[in-house]
Amino acid sequence: MVGFEVGAVPFNPDGWGPPDSPAATLSASNHPSNVPFAPFSRSEKLGRIADWTRNFSNQNRPGSKQGGHHDSAFDFSGDDSFATLAADEDSSFRLVDTSAKSHHHNPNRPKFNPRWRFNQHHNARSQLPQRRDEEVEARKRESEKERARRDKMYNNRSQTQQRRESSPEWNMLDQIPFSTFSKLSFSVPEPEDLLICGGLEFYDRSYDRITPKNFRPLERFKNRNFFKVTTTDDPVIRRLANEDKATVFATDTILSTLMCAPRSVYSWDIVVQRVGNKLFFDKRDGSQLDLLSVHETSQEPLPDVKDDINSIHSLSVEAAYINQNFSQQVLIRDGNKVDFEEPNPFANEGEEVASVGYRYRRWKLDDDMYLVSRCEVQSVLDINNQRSFLTLNALNEFDSKQKLETQRGAVLATELKNNANKLAKWTAQALLAGADMMKLGYVSRVHPRDHFNHVILAVVGYKPKDFATQINLNTSNMWGIVKSIVDLCMKLDEGKYVLVKDPSKPQVRIYDVPQDAFDNDYVEEPLPEEDQVQPPAEDADGGEANATINDVENKEINNEAA
Picture 1 (cartoon, one colour):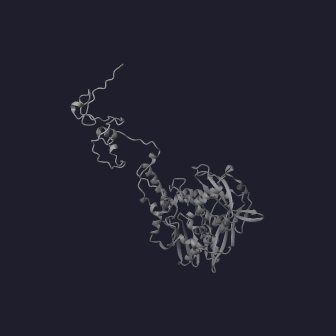
Picture 2 (picture 1 turned 120 degrees about the horizontal axis):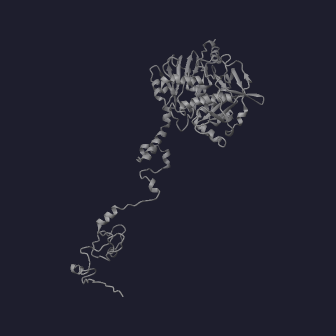
Picture 3 (picture 1 turned 90 degrees about the vertical axis):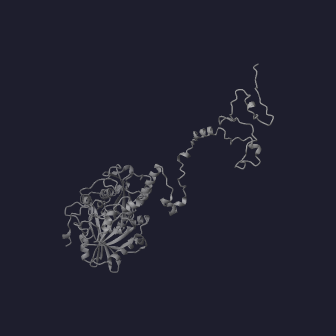
């Protein structure tokens, strides 16, 4: 057998543990000198058995037990032996947390409180803790841009507007906030038709059966002329004014702009002329009223870049093209048409004109005050042996084809949210014209980046009164707005004035302007149009757009007044 040698065990006659004598300690072979008996590694569980000679100065520390003297004699957790070695081990030690929570947790991020939505104090960005990492900062900048959406839409042309308003020739007479318009109400009796001019073609009912799967391409009608003539340039209105048929004269476009003013976001202007006891509401040549706004009330602002096909001005011109072509394509072009008492008052002999009928209608506003307006209808339809007038308009959708097949109601709700003012104006014009039906076409681009080619996806018909109720358009409030503005203008002296929708606030202002304002040689350019940003380029760009959209600017009709 192999023997086992225990070795020399020193004897301590004075107590427990090894003796204090160096000689007894060195009696053990290969025993290092002056080295305490302690573990060399934190993983080792070796140590002294007990030490009753230690000074316990932290008996009441948290977690210690009362009367724990016996346990403390065996506790070496506070031993500072090899403290330097332990410190070096701790400094090189790193704890890695692999949970997903640690990667995204930001201690400086504020906790969400649902009540912040309704608390202006917490909604202020200055009250929130600042977040410093680059990704959050980028998101914060995007949030600031979205927060400033309305300011950008209101102020996209405010600099030019302010320069015009600060002109010493312009004197602001009054400003009316839109909040006062919501309280107005006025009822008018049924209007009477004084005269109907032009000619109408019949509506093609096959377009009611169009679906997104069997769409039809949108055709172009370059040979047909469209007219956007203002009030005082209309020879029929001049004749009716000379015959004292009314005291207030306007067009359906101008009246609908006034009636739906509280829903407008973009700036617009209407020229008011007081001549004797008569009042004329006019629009400028090349006015924004000749175009159609797109996504005016949308939550996402459109780019205001001139070269972008999805900019505010480009989409307005595109919408005007689409509406003109759509209003002629859905007709039966077989030469059969309904001619009224007088031909188109703006067309020359032998000129091909678009299918349109002008109804000159008169409303009674007061005992001695009547209003005459030129109203337009685009088509006619025989229903149960009764002739019905139709208005034709198209909604242009430019970003992607929507799901009209299964979600037509959702698409209409989206259009009502993004184009609330435009749809309200179309409804108001249909009501003013006495149309029995208003047809809305859904027109989309063939490709999102192609703004020249379009397709008709669907055509839906509505009764104007029912659609007005659906979009919460109150006819009494519409006429209340017109009546209040007419009463205000009738109190003014003879001269020329302009109603301007403030580009940055929901209000309308009235200015006294010189008689030569807005003439062809006047140096100032139109108020709300994109051409204002660069006035020198307006003659070329604006002239090209107006030549395409309305062909009446180069016509002189002074000789027709006789």
